[in-house]
Length: 176
Image (cartoon, rainbow, N blue to C red; front, side):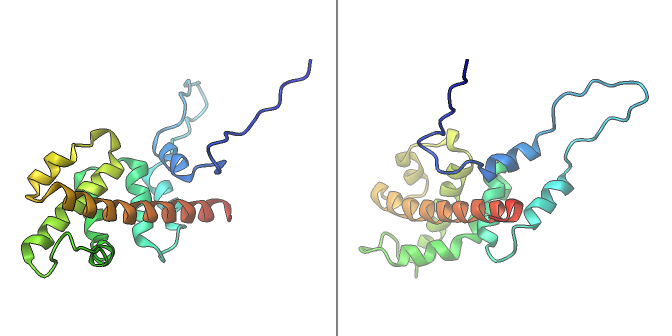
């Protein structure tokens, strides 16, 4: 009897997701039963992952850092560092918005922008821990509409960086 043809998933265009591969590299391999006289092979170490990420190149540091943070489910300190590195790009996109949700000449609005960027980065890395926009806007002492507009800009910057990091890691691994 002939086996039915396997149909590719119609919703995805990528056959191999490089971020999933990077995340799998972080987790140790399958269970190995110890056998007398045979050395057990160690799993992947942090050096192996650093070498794979090092192949990504230095032209897009934000993309590399975003891909690594998403794949490894970075803690809050690394998410804050990621948000700080994306600050300039988000400022450029927020300045283009009309009407302007924030006046970036005021220090309190720049601080609010940093809070929104951190929230957008945290939502990207930990999508299961999202909080309602109303609560986040209240914490940042902003109007909800302004908060959502700035959050949308920051999320766009992070998704673009994630796609760039994903394609850079794929190019580094498979030369595509």
